[in-house]
Image 1 (tube, rainbow, N blue to C red):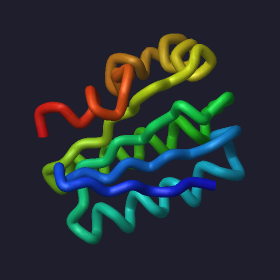
Image 2: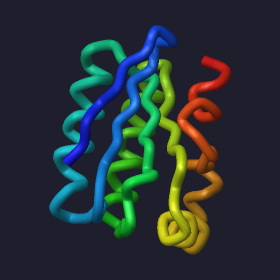
Image 3: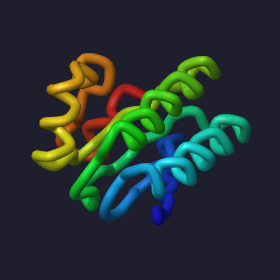
Image 4: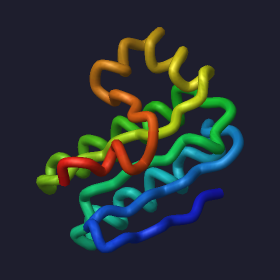
Length: 110
């Protein structure tokens, strides 16, 4: 469902693919929780390969954001497609999860 990339900059990038929904959201949220427990609370979710997101996917992102921030980190999203951006805007979650154009831009400032 996703893979992770690590770099020397101290963040983890998760890359979900396809539909980010009721089926795929729980494993991603569980992985975010695991990373936060491991002390890796700077997370970028690269949405470039996601072509659909629903409320379950949004819930996983918001839950991950909350978990990361509680540990002094952050969760940022990058490379969201048109459908994802539209859903974020419709739900006003674009105010909380501002989409960055690239993973590099998202990790800037850490």
